Image (cartoon, rainbow, N blue to C red):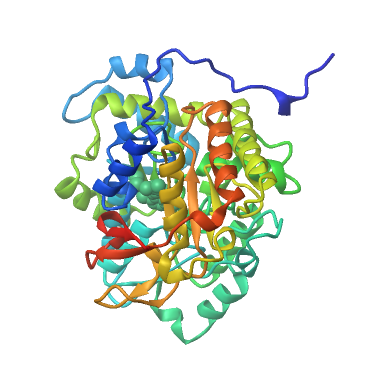
Length: 462
Ligand code: F0G
């Protein structure tokens, strides 16, 4: 009897574990109050299930740790560097690879070298640090997501795509001279972990080539995007995830990659480039600010884990099991009457808190309220993606313009939680969905002017 691959468990077993705490309801109440009702201020040892981020939070493999023991910490030209660069070149095909300690360092170096003040960087959606680094280069970050992305409930397979009509309009209009870069984020983390199709990437490449605009990938989740292409895009069923990822890199002029996600490591990233002059500019900046061009702020043992990680992550059995686990969690949550952005992606689920908590207005922060309730009821930590994070506010913290949606992101660390941990998450959410009206809203007590969501303090409304 042949086995349906979709029913296979993850292709690994667990060898090293760490304990997770279970606080009492009283302890959780006190912890959240002391944290100013901001989950970013909680101590990790107060959290039972941490779904704040899938970045740098994954489990490494025995092969990665064995490789790390061989890490060569030479200042220049270390063995570990050559192992890393060979793997990354083999995957991406870019002649120039610059290592960085994490994705945003790559963004800062690339944008400050490539973008001129006043230029526009166009994206399907900029991630928040990406947006910030474009602005730090005195350029404008402009998002042109495809129209399908605005319907959170539709089953369209590639809602991460860019709006090609809108992109063409800019590239053929009066603003063409100002466009310094087109950056495609795969998968689209800012918009529901939705993948980008190869057809969309090919069309972007064609438009960029015709109008002589550099085309880059923000490829933090290159393997997960490749898996979703294999599963959803006609014509790619016989391609391996690795072939698809390599093809995506081949379409672009270069990339910035945070390897804290699909590099299966706690730290790391790289810039990939074809252009010699751009490489020379970025390399000088790298050496001045991150480290020499054969380590870029990373230790030799990090480079070893990363070299092994970018190979392991392309295993179809791993990607299939990870996608199935997220989809299973989505089904359980949806069956409990809680809506998530459809269709489920891989690295995170985005809960429609605005719809679950209609008694809370945007200025009472329904997404944040749901996040706090998940901690109060079950010790679960996650991130709000709603008006607290994206809304426009005045100096008195009054909400002037709400975010388009009130969402909560449940990010799933790689190889860390079993389906039974995720069953627990679903059951806590289902409990909230049974009596959503008991979830209280929040108001801001104090807030920094920049990057508000990290340090804001709040209190519950009566
Ligand atoms: N690009 C994307 C699409 C990201 O999701 C992230 C980080 C970065 C760039 C920056 O990379 O963290 O290595 O500097 N995303 C994390 C998250 C923080 O939780 O989604 P970094």
